[in-house]
Every structure is written in C-alpha cells, then in structure tokens.
Image (tube, rainbow, N blue to C red; front, side):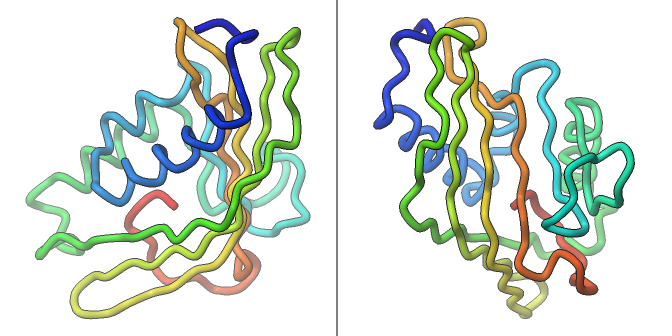
Length: 162
C-alpha cells in the first residue's frame, strides 16, 4: 500500500479493526498498528494541546505500551485476576484529513468504552482521534488521542487501552 492507495473505506475499516484488537485483547497486534515513533495519548483535559506541557493520564510511546502490555499479562497483576474484559461501541467514524501527498490521514470516532473487571462495570464515553500514515506498506497509527467526556474528573483505574 502507498499513501495514494488509502481510501476513506480503508480508514474506517482500520478504526474498527483497531477497536476489535483491543476488545479481543490482541495487544501485541494492536501495538504493532503504531509507527515506530507513534504515540497513544489520553490527555487529562480535552482542551489540552501539548502532552509535554500539560497533564495527561497516559502518553505512551512504543516502550511504555510494551511495558503496560507485559504488566497486564503478568500473574502478579492482581487487578487482572480474573482477567478483565472490555468492549468498544463505536459511532460512525469521520475522515477529517485525507492528504496522500503528505502521507497524513486523520479520523474522528465517538465511542462508548465499557470495561468489566472483578464484577464491576465501568463505562467511559469519548472521542478517539487517529492520525494515520502509511509505513512499511500498511496503514499505521502515528498518534491515537482519546478525549474522554470525564477526562478532567477523577477516573476509575483503567486497566486497558481505550
């Protein structure tokens, strides 16, 4: 695949595929969706624009995502005994930027995330902003930003990626 091959339907399928990997806890495959320099960002306020100068719940590069994934799989992760589960309910995604010349594609997807852990259900609504680019012949995430409706409020301990 080249940037010229990227279509709106391909971008919308990529959004759904990314959520499915998380729901099925296929975390290594999910992590592989990112470019080597890709980031996962969960700002502490939806108005934040700079993860290096403003508070974030998470701002994970490849190494931090790998560490979190290993921790979730560890038998010492007591919060995951028994393992929790999650589900993403996605609204229709939108393609906001489709710039093949710059190899930059941006999407916006409202969602409701539900997590079941230790008999308790947590539900978090929000919007996922994906910045995609073609890397090594495939669509990859340069950035996933998750703006939670409750971002500025105290959040429950979130065990999975949203």
